[in-house]
Length: 496
Image 1: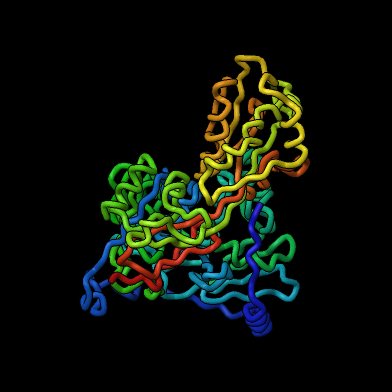
Image 2: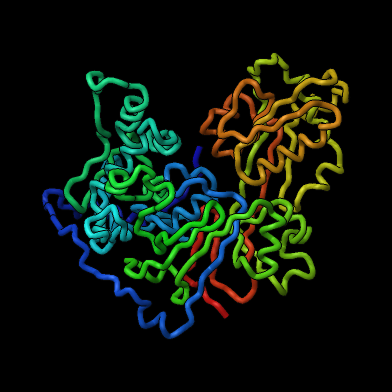
């Protein structure tokens, strides 16, 4: 259900020292008002060089800029430009301080006490008095995690953190299934407590050394309560965070413009010439790549399957001949996803029969048509079942209904496989967040499938492995990706 992000021994030692020196009885109260004022102009160091707008292209539209609705990687990348969590991740995936300047761990490793920095302010927004963003408070952290449990937001964030934070599972179930005030038993998450305005304590169900790294996820970024009181749309179309960039404007679902936050508490996290970011969304890979070719897009954080087939060398060591002068390839994360058989499907189809539609994957030309960064392996049991069937395994007209998690290559792989059997069977593909028993197969990334309980009793019939890459045009440098899908670093960004 999750990827483990290991913390270094040095960081663990620092946390232990902090825990030994803690003084929980000391209460610090600070003013909520902003004491650092934006000048309204670019600071002097930016004035010395031409400002630059980075144009990022994608085909997966975010749908919402509310962190709890950010289910695809594209949306999560955008979220982390605008919002911050208590922690962030470094290039190696280790937790580092962000909105929390430090944290302490109790001797039994069950309590994490985070101390908030005093120079972090929410972006200006009409939701605040005089439209000026205020300081981030410990009560904001309480609010964000309590909101994860509400019935009117997706359950994914709440379900994930319920595995770790004491009392969160009970609170989530109460919020989702209790409809009368008289039946409320909990009313809050027992494992989250604001000790004062600048300190918040998490109590866990059991020790989890990677908990600070989990708090860096886009689901756990911090935002203010006032936004939801001020406008019915909340954060969907006008996000408010503390990030290096703040929302400026949007044009339908094709363009989102972010401007540099010049009172950022960590200005070095974006190159000094970078004053704005435009996120551009296209209807197809072809349109996106055309925009890159005509210099209307500078960066594609994750190239799609058709672009990979065009640009990647067969050995995956770089770009195919003729493209290196125009573009630079950025190694990114490796993802794995499987094709799972719905054993208790309503059609009553058994595995031996369903294996017949996997026969195209046994052919050499099937693998040959995949992008060079996408490979697959049939489970030996399913390979034997498929080899023992023939093309007439199903009667003509039998409907093969399959589903896919709505994300990039998983969807592409499902569509490509179904296309191979479209001449033999009536096939349909549903792009959904979770499977149902009307389906015979469901394709999902490993982390998503584990969260759904897939693969616990029966492994995937087919396992896919995908090496991801980003792509940017020549003339810019200093963009870094890593093994965390939503992570982008612009701290070394430069323009030639």
